[in-house]
Structures are given as structure tokens and as C-alpha cells.
Image (cartoon, rainbow, N blue to C red; front, side, top):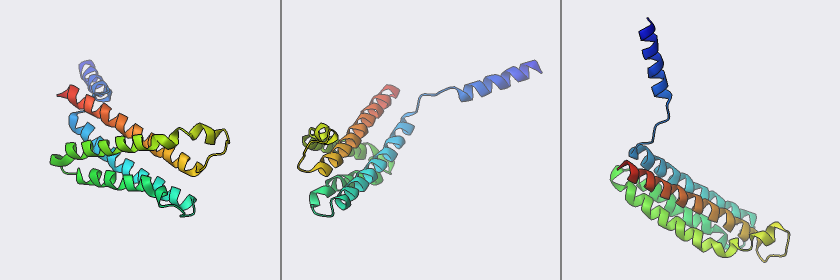
Length: 150
């Protein structure tokens, strides 16, 4: 009976032990993260457009960036397309990050209450920049994890 109990405890302990994610889990997670990133960028863009009173179409730029990212996340649902879809979405996110840096530079002025020409654009660009940067960082991390797993 004691041997049976120790085997049961060993089995429970091994099932609760943290496991390194398999390559398939990492890729599937990135597909989900890609879809969520695209959807979030679309929401940010539409919200920015509404907040500005629909005055400027440029407020929709995060949504315009989010549409192909979301599309690539959906297109990458097939296993044979996943790597290509994630790589392409990461390139778009990197371009989005770099493209928003011009407005992000003005964020400290907005936060301190200084006069800025388009404060909403600065805030929306900063949020877009952060989302893109996080997505790229997660993508790089997933590539490193996948490479280590072979």
C-alpha cells in the first residue's frame, strides 16, 4: 500500500511539474497572440477615430495596421502557413512600432500637460507603439523557444 501511495504521489508531482512548452504550443500561442494583437489594434484605431470626432482619417492608422495583422493571424490557422503568417505579421508590427515613434517622443509633454498639437494622436500612437513592441518581443521569444526545441 505504501508503494502504491508513493507511486501515486510521484505521478501527481510529475503532472504538476512545470514543463517547457512544445514547439507546437509556442506556434499556436503566437497565432492566437497575432489575432488578438490585430483585433486590439483595430479597436484602438476605431476608438481613436471616434474620440477625435471622426475629424481625421489618420486616426484610423492603428486599425489599418491591425487589419492585415488580424488577417495574417486568421490565414495562419493552417499549419503549413503559420510560420509565414507570423513572420509577416511581425514585420508589420515592427514597421508599426517604428512608424509611431515620431508621436511617442511627444508623450512626456502630453503627460505633463504641456501644449501639444494633437494630444489624442500622441496617446493613440503611444498605445499602438507599445502593442507592436510587445508583440514583436513575444514573437522573438517564441522564435528563440522554438529554435531551442529544435
